[in-house]
Image (cartoon, rainbow, N blue to C red; front, side):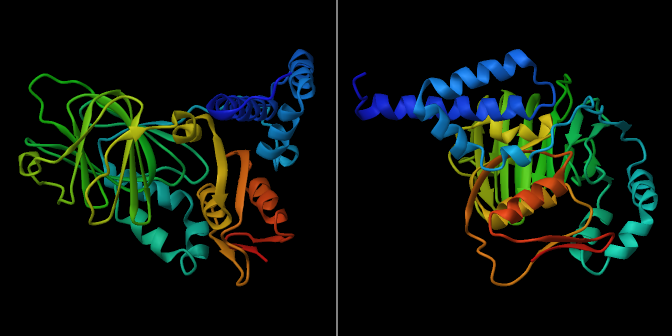
Length: 330
């Protein structure tokens, strides 16, 4: 066979990597048949590039725990008495919160100051006052401020997908996050906040992102607002305007909705932080750990402790869990 050269070779390698990732997802889905296994072996063994790509993309695949149980349906919550809901949700886990108050104080305060919080390790489906919906990921927090001039939602932690209902004559829907705003009359989009970094990914219709601005700012004051189309993504940092939209990797951006975490060369510290979103106790790294080590893999969000242990093994580290207090990587 003639060796491929130039762009075609790069494109072929990219497709092989995508195929390898698809096989990882299938093999860790918990519903792999004998036919699937035979098809995988044929794919893996037909070319050395396939085997190499699979080994490269599946650094942790043999350590993943397949989930045989069907995916739980996210609880549906009506946004009628938001503050009462938030307090009930915390009181249900009061003992754990009391135990982690000192170690996880910033997280605790941020959640308590909002209206709705998804339980850690779970997803929650929220029906907003106008009939729009929000799917909240583990530990994500929302604050609502609906009024005659604006349907306002603030995402103060985590990530969520919003399906905005098109209502004739209704004010626009606005998501506030890290000093920036996303506005639409009807759309489906996901939003994520990481410390001082925000990401907006659009799935359907159209939305406008602008800022930095307060939550009640007029869109007309921002002629350079960014418009995003389906399968596009924009980001911004606290106090900065949004970037020009780019094509989004929808598989990576929405993996959490399928109860998966996908890493592609992510720094060890960032990977640990991502897994930590699904753990009740805060994760602490001892000094001296190589936090920049790139890691790749596919994990189930239903087995976050196993994922953390697999990550730790990349540096011959151990994981020690102090129930209700913290998880130490040493």
